[in-house]
Image 1 (cartoon, rainbow, N blue to C red):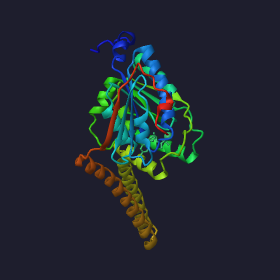
Image 2: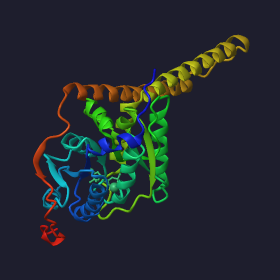
Image 3: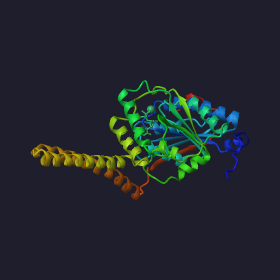
Image 4: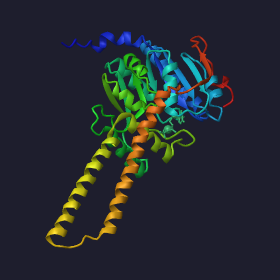
Amino acid sequence: MKAPRATPKKTAHSRAGAGLSIVIPAYNEAYGLPGLHDRIAAVARKLHAERGLAVETVYIDDGSSDATFRVASDLPADGFDVQAVALSRNFGKEAALLAGLEHARYDAVMFMDADGQHPPELIETLVSRWLDDGYDVVYTAKVHRENEPWQYRFGVNWFYAMVNWGSKHKIPDDAGDFRLLSPRATQALKRLPERNRFLKGLSTWIGYRQIRVDYEPAARVHGKSSWSFWTLLLLSIEGLTSFSVAPLRVASLLGILLALGALLFGIEVLVETFLFGRDVPGYPSLVVGMMIIGGVQLVMIGVLGEYIGKMLSETKQRPAYFVAEHLTKTADHEKASPPESRAAE
Ligand code: UDP
Ligand code: MG
């Protein structure tokens, strides 16, 4: 018997009582942080005034070489709390997101980028989907990818097709890391023990009530994306091998295809020799056959190695990151510090 679902209106207040931590991973984002913080602050104060929702921002400096941590530490806790956490080196965005999740002090968590591409003005919409409509995972997706090169779009489509192939928990196309998790979804995410993480996949996998919100991605405020072809390729391999055994299935399928091909070829050889008495030219067909089999085997050993490597790194159970510095500023509701009081940016 299914228990009847509580109506959103009844529980909205208790949900809001939980508070919201906004986790922002930042790698060399010193220049854009103050502007972003101001925009978040406006929304945070509104949420607090209108819904009584406590908000904090958690900036994770992912081993930046610029002044990101100093700038984050100087941001005013103007009406809401601010945490600044510096990791001991650059661990990558997924590790930074995990650090944010583990430092978040409120029950609900939101993840957003530090480069201004995730518009803070959308926070209200996400919060409304959570509090008013009772959704647990509110994820965002880009309405279009027209400003991205076709090769990139092709790669993205191919990636999702592979990850979702035969999987019961489909990761939505184009979903980004910009998302809000309700307290119970946050709890669930915290319970997933793996060190090699892929947030989009994990937060889909936990289930609960999920909803998509479309948005128009903004241009980066400054600098350029830290993803290169190779880092994207590595993340794709990470995502693929974390969430699907599709590459292993490809191996089995290829094996079956090759065996079938060999069988047909063998029958042809028999027919040619016995029925028509023709000699089958041996050398070229032998070399081609060997090269195909050798190539496929090497690729598939690589695929197996990918999974074994993942098992190795999980069994080592190394921490996903180390914290070098951590600062928490508590909200001062009385004192509104003017933007000029910030340290030089
Ligand atoms: N980021 C990070 N560690 C890294 C690379 C990126 O914390 O090693 C952060 C970065 O500061 C930004 C977010 O992850 O806030 C997204 O990065 P980016 O804008 O480079 O990626 P894109 O928007 O192109 O996917
Ligand atoms: Mg970006």
